[in-house]
Length: 236
Image 1 (cartoon, rainbow, N blue to C red):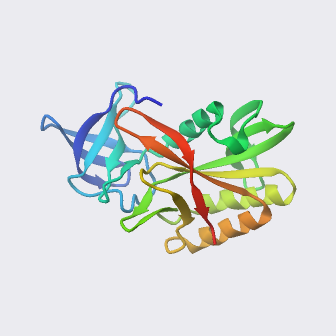
Image 2: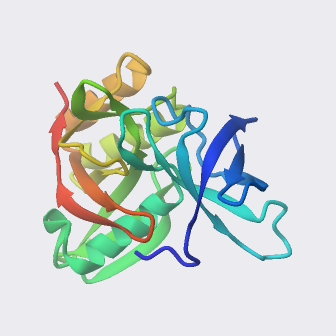
């Protein structure tokens, strides 16, 4: 995926009220950007960090800029706009990058399923059977490790999705969780049980029930981002 319009570079001044970020532009002007990330963004932010943002002239939007990328304190590139993950995975599915799901004949988005009124990010038709797919964006990294973790904050919604997938798998249907790791220089993904032990427990239960847990890494530059390669999962 190419960023369109082209991203602009700046310096992060602060993130506040979760969805706002003040950025100093290259010309010294200031812009308040939308931060499309509900998590803590742990280990992603530092005052003065290099960031990249997009602009949008939609008159219905209050904020005309969206924070997209950041250079983390560990020197990695991260895409903090979690709204990008589904599109990236969809592009990868269509291109056959996610080999475990290659050969599907139909893709539907935001499909209702489960007992808790959920919507699957994707429902694929594969070998004549539905495959329910949930996507999670991962940006939590650590200075001394090439293993990223999810989540970066307690996520009741994430645990709910795991319960729904677990029920599907236990009934014999194919259920898949994909961690889209929007962080460079990562080789594996684990559950952040130190942050959300209930999510970690639900993930272990889902895996035991037959939910397929996949992780894929991305290539990130200020001009393009794409899902490119599989990563290991550390679930024990």
